[in-house]
Length: 441
Image (cartoon, rainbow, N blue to C red; front, side, top):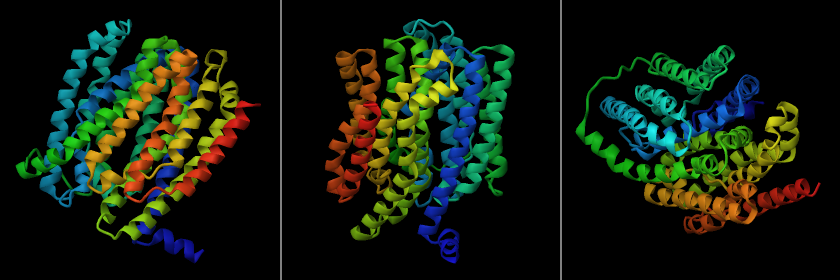
């Protein structure tokens, strides 16, 4: 007991990583439980097409956000002066300006988007939902500063509280309106609550001011140019599937796919959070260590995260059909097999993950290249799958792209001596055996 207390309560890097990883894992688990409960309620209040429309609108806005990402928060975390007041104020002003520009662009593309997808409701919906981009521009830079120092507990409490309020609002709106607009206004109001909560609970006396230090701005832009490129690819890697399915199939099909992805994304969302909130700050701190020590820390991080998340992905792979049949009505039946297929791809991503190593070690160009490869392979695999297997192949292609990407990624991992092939071989063998068992039942 004393040993565990020493490990988790210490102030060394190892203790901070374990503590931050545990808090992130638990808080994201609670968030996903809340999301699942709200999803179950909303599927009974709204029609499947509503989830497809919202998924499409959200993907477009996320795309706008990522296509203009200059890495403001990443700069605060990675830059040695990131915690200084002048740097934070500069980052905050840049963030606000970007948010309003994004809202304007969202309104400009809303009408042609509604024509392209033949859905008139997308026009006003995107304009209204786009206001969240401007609202979130006012988010405090204390979020990034707390990430930098691995002070995850406060961040988790604020995120959990904001999401809880958001879910309550959306369910109330959905009950009274039975409309997709419930999802929109719930997101707008929760964005406002999140901004106020961040400034109230995370700033610790610091007050943002509208001031710019031009040298800091140049540093943010210099670092952010590769964030910009990687964000473009990142958008395609994470959201091209929804946009392709929304165009090639119906919005109802997209809604069913979204239900499957809601479950499949649980371990992936936790992985993304751990990579950004824990591993990125850690890698930024250890970049000056000798190679052998770096390899040890990367391996420990890989084993920790894989041990936490791989069982979740495998559970979804085994129980996907049963979960959907048990929780949803007949309209969502196809989400079961979709979930099982998607879980295979996500299990592969988790098993082979080494986190944002290249970004943390100041190699954003290489990071952008790897994200670009993932995006290209996702799109190519989806279209190849569709040609070979029809609509089913779109989903199979998503999972298959994860394995193809890993085979290419081996080159980059080997170059930096962080390819732990024996660990990957064991994990992939387990995934393969379980997949064979599930699909031959």
